[in-house]
Amino acid sequence: MNELMRHALNLPPQASSFARHIDYLHYVVIGSAFVICGLTFLAILYMLIHFREGKACKKHGRIPRWLEISAASFTLTVFIVWWVIGFPQFREMRTPPANALRVYVVAKQWMWEYVYPNGITAEDELHVPVGQPVELLMTSRDVIHSFYVAAFRNKQDVVPGRITNVWFTATKPGRYPILCAEYCGAGHSRMRGVVVAMEPSAYADWAAGHHSKDLVQAGEKLAADYGCLRCHTVDGTPHLGPSWKGLYGSTIPLAGGGTVVDDDAYLTESMMDPPAKLHAGYPPLMPTFLGRLSGPEAAAIVEYIRSLRSEPNE
Image (tube, rainbow, N blue to C red; front, side):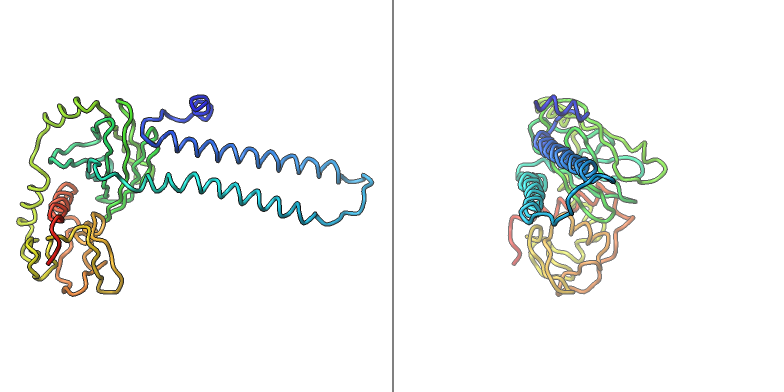
């Protein structure tokens, strides 16, 4: 039945762990819409015939209260059913597993660039192991793009100066097209890529053949080269800026009131637009690195800060 419905609706192959469940929701929505449209059409047809001009009929009365309540209850029930099915899927798609392989993605006109934890960089082709959850942490160097893999049922906007994330688990080997689903300029139609889903052993061979410097080590060197360590310490000692020791994942107070979780998105925003969300208790001294840090460099620094999260701040 699933394959029959998929072909009837001309949907692409189901190649991720939650593609089938997304399609089931699609079937429910489409089926409910057809039922409601059919009932509406029958009601209109009945009224056209029963109340047509020139036909003798009784004086029009009020619609029975029970019919109004029934129609409203039915419509509300349909939407509640959609929510009950869809909300758990939304939560699942927004919460990557703890063991997910983290890959940094940089979108720019008109290409995709990937940075792996072991320092491997690649363009347009995203290699992933089958059966392994993969979390993509994405940002843009210029305009808004949108990462779309139809076979995985994934689509997520990629925004300049921010980190957005999406995750998936490929279920079968193959090559799955990546499209940009947000108009991004004259070359928008050429902004294509491909997810290469590989058996774990084949992926391990590919990674071994493309070994590069560890991303954490690269981030540590970049932090020194760009002068980050002049203001930030890595041992918990207070300085001009907050110490990076134990900073990642903590909840920090903001100068303008409120709090924010120090995660990939906040760290990236702080590097590209420091005044946007100032850490309370520290002067606004940090310069912007927008246009100075490349995507892989920003990813390496974030990964280095993340590596210092094991010990809490003092």
